[in-house]
Amino acid sequence: MSHEEEVLGKAYDSRLMKRLLGYLWPYTHYATAALLAIFLNAALQLAQPYLIKVAIDTYIAKGDLGGVSRIAVWFFLVLAGGFALEYLQTWLMNMIGQRIMFDMRMQMYEHLQRLDLRDYDKNPVGRLMTRVTSDIDVLNDLFSSGIVAAFGDVFMLTGIMIVLLTMDWRLSLIAFSVLPLIVLITEWFRVHVRESYRTVRTLIARINAFLQENITGMATVQLFRREAVNLGRFDDINRQHRDANINSVFYYALFYPAVELIAALAAALIIWFGGGWVMAGTLTLGSLVAFLQYSQRFFRPISDMSEKFNLLQAAMASSERIFALLDTPVTVQSPAAPKKLEAVQGHIKFENVWFAYKDDTFVLRDVSFDVKPGERIGVVGATGAGKSTVINLLLRFYDVTRGRITIDGVDIREMSLADVRGLFGLVLQDVYLFTGTIASNVRLGNERITDEDVRRAVKAVHADRFIDRLPLGLDAPVAERGATLSVGQKQLLSFARALAFDPRVLVLDEATSSVDTETELLIRDALRVLMAGRTTIAIAHRLSTIQDMDKILVFHKGELRESGNHQELLARRGIYYRLYQLQYKDQETAPTTA
Image (cartoon, rainbow, N blue to C red; front, side, top):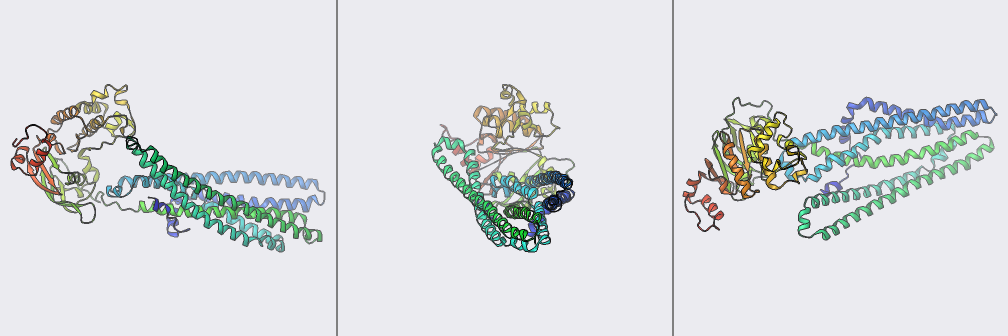
């Protein structure tokens, strides 16, 4: 993760900028208004020194108090207009930045929801979070104070140069004589700040990664008493981050005073030469005063543009990472013209299925089996045998490498993802609960599931026994990942969630492996009733949970090696028999037959 954060990329990439400007397109009218406000404000900024020149040369020199009063009124109106225009441009640009940021985050989140699980296997959560948060924040800075505002700086510089040359070319050349110094100090600042920015970004990425890993695993940290060790590691990373920020402050603290010093040098030269020309009568006093004010305004946009260069560079790097994520292809998706099952029976067939998560390292090899409507199937095997992969393929979290999977004779790749996944109720070993209430975690936003349906589901799996003891019952709050509930309670809620959706096919993936014996007995009792008339596929390590299944599939090293009911498999004395003996070896009498 940190390596990816280190890359700053080009200072400007036309391909990326073209894509970024596409997000600006819906708000072109706002951007045009902001640009017009910037230009008008720059024009009013240019008018202020000129009004002072007119006041000194035309009215003060002649003692015309009325003329001075009129100039003062005009000066006040120019200031008021500049204030209004600056407010307008600031509001418009920040509004545009926020809307673009909103649009991009919505687009990214929508893409993340469609992204293949294969991509989540490769990308840490922290990296994806960075894309949606800090990288988009950088682009917000680009749109709110970068792109359009840079036009204003260029317009201001061009306008000042034209005005100065028009007023007096000799004094203009003197004012511009310090520009080589400005170029040198700006280039020095740009190079060093670029490196400093890279270091700070790398270190903040390390801090985020460290915090995410260690906060998530805090129970393990405390159990093995690693607090002091981890604190020392965090202290080291945090100190490096602090020092890198202080280092970057050094360059900013030196650059801006250096620009002010060069501007002061230019002002001194203007006073030195201009003062002599005023006394010689070849330059008016008003022009000299205007020159001084224009020179002050001239160097401010230069320093601002140096900062905008760094902003542009950071935005190019962030946009490259964002677009790399958005351009990640979604391979598992609904076909253009999906087939729809009229009357779902729940007849599932695996036909010569091969599958590899990566390259040609197959985790399933030539797997074929048939699950008839209403049939209850158990799936067993050693760790890594391919049991969970069967479920991942059935729900189209991944697509098969070879062969096909059909439901009621239709290849699941020819059906819409919503239709395929809508057939299943899935209960995983690792239960995921969302922040909300008990009821919202059972319903999961499906308004067709009424409160009565929720109550019926929790009662069916005996979850009502602990829910009724909670002060708010079904409205009791659930913390992030269900932190306030026990493992067994979360498992019961996951059963209630699956059953509330009334699926045609019930899929259980190690669903009772994390509950105590008493809770497991409650669940098994509920399942006997709930599986009636519903196709069921249950993956289990505990063979006791699938002994009464209609058929048991035994996987070994990615292959379907045995198939039959409990008694038949024990009689074969094969893989299933050995698994059964291993689980019951501590009992006084190990079974030899059923």
